[in-house]
Length: 281
Image (cartoon, rainbow, N blue to C red; front, side, top):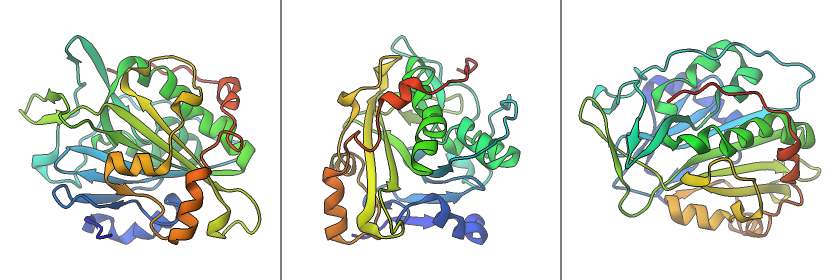
């Protein structure tokens, strides 16, 4: 497929970091009408959509660690100076839409990058290029539990985990209007794809194991169960993205049947310790 993505020039000097964050290549964007600008940070990479005014995918890797750091959460969100001024939506909260409160949801979580990559990388998660409008009850509920469990449950279990997350939009998404007049489409759900080699040799593509999840915006604080499990083709159809683009068609086809929680037990999420997250709006 043709990939309508371009690495921002300012990210070019550290574009090699994508090899750390994106398993088998950065997601390819098949939507010619909505090109994607790839931004590379010190703890993650993402694809920013100027048409959507928000990220459409973000990728990072976490590993099992004998010790970690835990800096205080930054108090400020930041406009990303790397994106064009007319794509900067401001740093304020999203407020309410039709009576529902929306938070500034992180695609790449502060928690994971803080503990794994340190202070500078943590600050980068507060760039608005990493933020999307997320239902407040979900952001502070099930989604937060999932984010923290990737580090505290799955990383120790799997040794290392690649994570990719992004929004899923409906055909006619509602819009949040910013103070500067820009209109931000609100996604109907969020996807999460976790990946890790299942067995030795660990760099062999055919040994990749994944878990694909789709969480509706209004999921709130409900339990994380099998009804969240979806398939890679379903997420690709819903987003127009192609994941693991370096895999052969044969190896990619195997992943359709490798979205079972047998290798990624959902009960591990429920048992993982969780830190409280302050309200953010």
